[in-house]
Image (cartoon, rainbow, N blue to C red; front, side, top):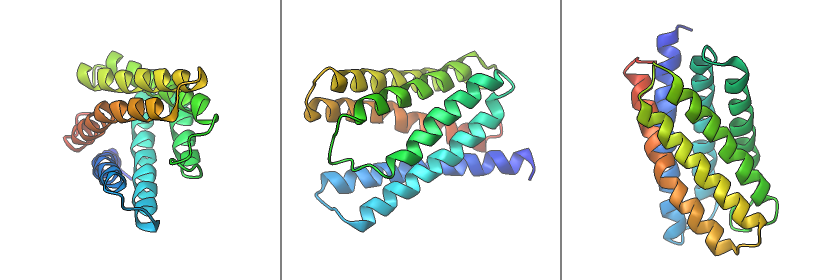
Amino acid sequence: MSNNNLFRYGGIAAIANAILYVLSLGMGFAGITGILVMVIYAVSSLLLVVALIVLYVDLRAESAMLALLALVLLGALTIWSLFLDPTNITPIWGPFTVVYGIGFVIFGWLQRNSSRYPNGLGVLAIVTGVVAVIAGIALMAGANADIFGLLNLILTVPFIIWSVRLGMHFLKGKA
């Protein structure tokens, strides 16, 4: 597979991830539950993993170990999240969210320091990661599920923007 195809697939996956994630959130807020929402969320998560793999492939030239660490943290936890009930916030969500946030911060730092990515893209990933870390620490410190949910909702905004911009960046062939 050529690099152009790889980045094209990564771009499509990143944008489709954002669309499906917003759709699953919207359906949840509308009170729609069931298998359809779970399937949409699962497909969104798997598309995020595809985009993260492509991001890793591109950023490993910057720092192979850090890029691999970010991929393992974000990729593994994204897949693991498919087996957790997002409506039942348990103590595992605290450390889970902290580690997830650290993965985003690492990817953001690598993007920010790479000449192939616009600075804003890395900043969006760092902001997403920092808010995730704060949410996880808040939950571990005893914050209730409503505070945790609000912080997760806040981190959704930079995450969605980052995902769409990453996809557009890949599709433009600038990586």
